[in-house]
Image (tube, rainbow, N blue to C red; front, side):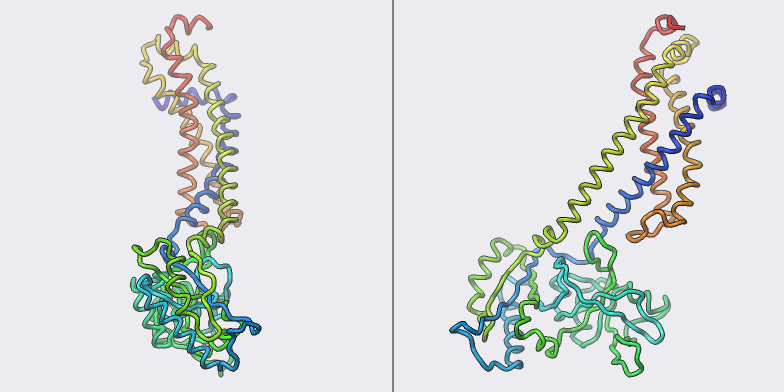
Length: 418
């Protein structure tokens, strides 16, 4: 059967060459679309490495000096003590599972601090996110070490050691080197202060749309808190994880319980926000952009579908008399359909061979986006398989419907046109 079909394709090469060229062009274009969608969705659905469910962020406010409740002459040391007291009182609230203070470190706020990290003659290629936090930050957002433990990260900060992400470790250490216990610095000078690495964190992504995974965490000490104990206190992030059974009307209930308790010196309980709600607002533009891109892709896919299906529909409809002749010569309807399916798939396969070469060259030359995912062999073949299957489905549908109608026509009627 295969030899017979190849002979038919050869005999009809004048008609098939145009179809082959069209399939070649469409397959390159469709592969590019498929690759873009695959990379985008793969990146979006990859685990973030942290959990924001049942978490909230709150800030302390500072009374205005004109307020009759404003207290003058509060020392910096006393103010820092109030911040520690505020955290302790939040932690003791029965609704709260864990609490922490951080600065430019909580998820989905869009504010960051970053630094370059050095180890001997090596340094990170790009700036690394700086997470300055109290130790329980890892419990609030459920960060994990490479060993799967949040406690390991907490204990590292409690020892006043650093936590590095796997990306940073990969840049600064060889695969056979153990980073824990080693030292790094934040400047190139010989007199730079050295910091000991206490633990290595598993991958933690910045959000669903970027590929920024590199971070280090250091403990928030009193010297750091002093710089934010005055007018900048509102930039400190008091983050909490709420017990799941208590996560209903939490903001209202927490404010009722804690407003008076957190009235410390010139501080008062300010804004409280749900972090999952913040995430929706923070990623709104990216989500809208993704929806628009998916709509455009869907529109293009529909057009490709209609084009390819229409061509094979017309082609099969035009061969109605040939189908009748085959049935009159003894072929069953299933055998006729099978021959046309194989013929269409052979034409597709012939077009996909040069397509694979073209895509390989385009990928090697950097035409495909590689920021979110490198152009690997796996990515290449996933694009190939999806593209091939989509086009095969279009071809089969373009043959199936008109051919099924044609095989039901009596051979004598079908041959009348001949």
